[in-house]
Amino acid sequence: MFFTMFKRPKIFKVRALEQPQKYGLAGRSLAELNQKACKKLQLPFSKCRMCLYEDGTELTEEYFRSIPDNTELVLLTPGQTWQGYVSDINQLLNSFYKQQDDIVEAAQKLLSDEQQGPKRRKILVDLIQSLNENILAETRDEDGQWFEGIEPRFKNKSSYMKYNCESRIRGYMREVESYASTLGPKEQAEYKQIAEIMWNELKSMKFNGCYFDRREEETRRLCTSEGWFSCQGPFDADDCLAKHSINPYSNRESRILFSTWNLDHRIEKKRTIVPALAQAVKEQNGRQVNWEYFYQLLFTLENLKLVHIACHKKTSHNLCCDPAMIYTKRALKKAK
Image 1 (spheres, rainbow, N blue to C red):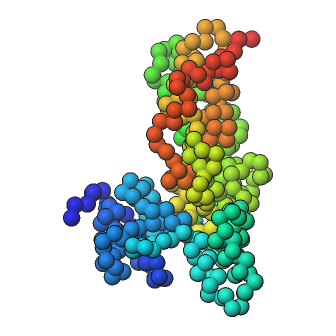
Image 2 (image 1 turned 135 degrees about the vertical axis):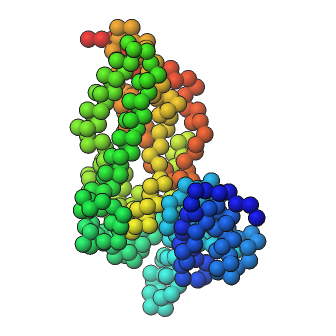
Image 3 (image 1 turned 90 degrees about the horizontal axis):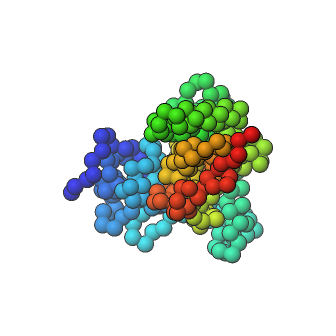
């Protein structure tokens, strides 16, 4: 059988639906991993499929290449389903049904009633939080395993998550700066000056690391005070229909998996915003470029959405038929 080859195999933790034991397996492709998992778990290879333990998202070859090592997976045979934490909680509820009749009845009703989505999600979150005793741990002493592979300078989870967000925003700023090389000498000087102003503004805002810091004020962060993040859906939707959620503060695996989530620009950074900024510089003709307008689109939640990788559409967003549309009256203003 032919497998798509990578430089090195990726390592995962795999288990079958009804088998609690996990196995470390490596594969250079999804097909290779499926074959090895079926052999190890003694399941028929035909029509078996692999999904994320976290939320049940089914893997494709493209998705396989994007998820990090040590991600936990579940191998499903035809007819089997896995809904991630929902499935785990169902099993937990069933295991102590006789002792907790009232709780089980209420929880199972919420799990099965599609009209009670928000309530169902709330009880799932509460149960998950109570099951994971390290979810509120902050320091290395409290949860040393969470910090495996992280530099010693990070003493608590929140500071690392803040740095994680800062790094993403810094990366966006570097992309803005690098575009200067496409301009002529005169425009390049003006463009670099605007980029420097944006950099200083970001520095004063600590590169918006507050978005991932659960210690921040509610209006400044994207997560709950416990560290739960919810997918905000694709660029062209108001919400995530799959209700993807994750808590990178809970354990090392979730922290690593969170790196596959995207801070996605609704109006695209590379295709639209940055080229429009450059065009505004070219056409200013004595007017002042409204750098604050571009700053908001590039680095703030006015245009950024946090999305699960399955909701991150890589096609053209087509929200603006022409880059010029986003730098009309707002992008250029009269010089003082």
